[in-house]
Length: 328
Image (tube, rainbow, N blue to C red):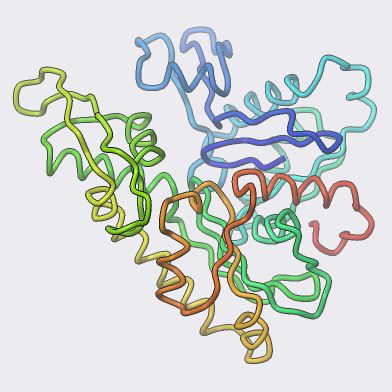
């Protein structure tokens, strides 16, 4: 299970069985779960006072313990109709950011156990991403993996089945969305919500002001801050590149910092192998080019960056014994 700030992906028997936004809708009076995942996402920002939508994870860790437990339970129910297979021994491997505290680790474990897992192991996200990309993590070769998710960006140098050094910064997809919201307010006097800023990022998001095949301008609908009337404005990728510049610069600084801390022999390996990008954030147009320009190293984007971490977690679960030292 890749329990992410933005999306939760569950792989069961080598198949992606759940790929849903990490969000839950609850009735305030009764505490009844109304919807999780995509259905709850559709309600987000559109609820009346008796319904609240909660994103139980913030910055890659559980912020709302009870909602997280409800959400995990509902997602487990979605994994398949054949319930008889589940109760006896549900083994779970969940990936966690590499920079979280022991208390936060405990919260993830407890939530999964409360939701019905018999045996829970944890694996660090960059390690899971490396396995999912197809890197042989057990070799004595240094590889650098950058996993840009919803809540955290994980930068790690991996060799011999362990993380040699890592940098976990709480700047990722959610911060990109917040940057876009702020930019729209300041430049276009228009108020937009979380879902709209996410769509802008997907449709016209870019890390560079000049890219090879630019996307068409995107129509944004929101509330005019002066008149209060809904209105439409068009934005292009270059504007969004300006809006995201500050956050991307922080990720670049963290990458350089991680490279500085790398032992010289591993640095020599990374010069040859390059940097691997995974996570939804790596889909941002031009991000690989921008990191390449900053580090002068080859940058490879994973084939399916959104599912790389979950796929690596699935492989770790299958090779439970081989990867015992990877999994807490």
